[in-house]
Image 1 (cartoon, rainbow, N blue to C red):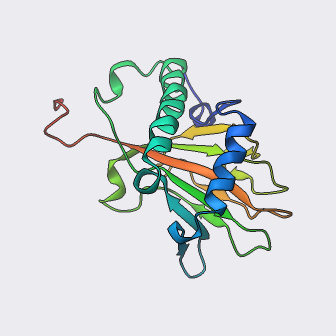
Image 2 (image 1 turned 90 degrees about the vertical axis):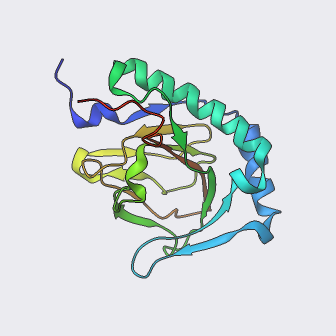
Length: 191
């Protein structure tokens, strides 16, 4: 069956209850000491909290939510044996983008060096619905609007450049994680 690249960008609704999304935002806002400012000149700008390090119980909860969607992704695309038998995962991060135009993530791909080359899938779970703040896939003519509990899953590779637009009226909050290929000693090699 022939597929379009856009078929590999899947959106899942209602993955996390709006009240739970709100409670994570509130907890983020009361945890300022755990925030890290992430900025690159003429590129991205946002604040993030390493959920895996600071909120391990939330990491377990979010991992289960994300893996439920990722299993649906795997099944819908009939990926079968092309998927690693075991996966690793990068840390879960909660990111906040403030309105005003400074906080954003211009068009990019998520694998740009050998360290990032273990990434094979991206999952973004939106925690709220600001005006703006869309995730845009310009080459696919695809726009994903933030909404509490909405998740988008897609490959992080060069075929899927995307941008996180700045929110217009209030902060945008997301949970973000990459799935990794396991170390070579775990996954059997194929000829």
